[in-house]
Amino acid sequence: MERSIENIWKEGFLKSDALIAPKINDLYAQKSIHIIDKFTRMFRINLKAIVVFSFVFLLISYLVGIPIMGIIFFVTLMVLVAINRSLLKSLETIDKGENSYEYLKKFNHWINKQVEINKRIAMFLYPISFMSIILGLWFKDAEGMFLGERLVNKIMIQFPEIDLLFGIPTLGIAIVLLILGLLAFFSGRIYMWDLNLVYGRVFNKMKELMSDLETLNN
Image (cartoon, rainbow, N blue to C red; front, side, top):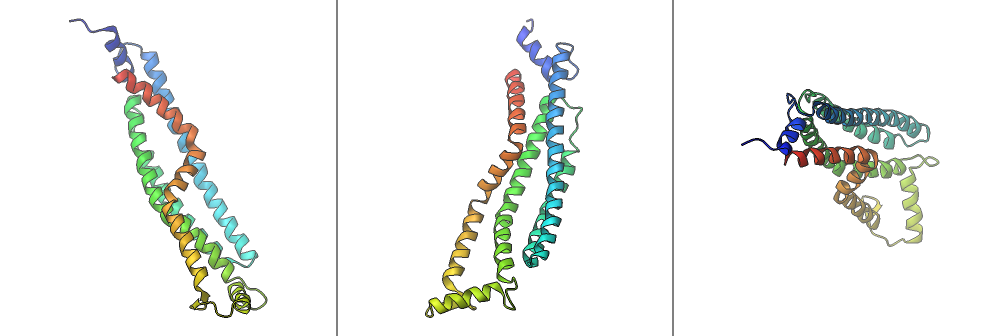
């Protein structure tokens, strides 16, 4: 039985050695490479921006007298950059010589892995970032006394019967713990919002391209 035109057409898209519709096949291959290359460039730029911001923030935190905040923030972001640079190297090993559909599938698999790893990191990143602000302000020098101690003294004057734990109002500790818990709980959603804000258009184009190729494959 002769093969249908539809089947021959599909093979033109999906087989690198097909003689049918080679220009269309090349077009999809070039689109696939272009989308992934664009993401890779954006990813590199984003990592470099994080590094620059970390150093600038570290310097500013020292100049304004809150070095603890800057140090914690700097170390946390450097760990984030190191992990994602390792992930980027694994992305660069994907073979561009494969047909466009397989190339996009492997890239999509890499994206899913990268997202899962960074969602786990976000569970610690956001709470640690918040704690760096709290600790930085608490240990800021305020006329020979830590700002946190000065604040507690003022609270004690207004509310002398307030409960303290390690010299800190228990209500304040409870509020901080609640915020930390919420940041950890919603960290995945916050990260996905941030991810889509930066790479959303690239991901949408990739999904459209994969949808076209899957339709032809079926």
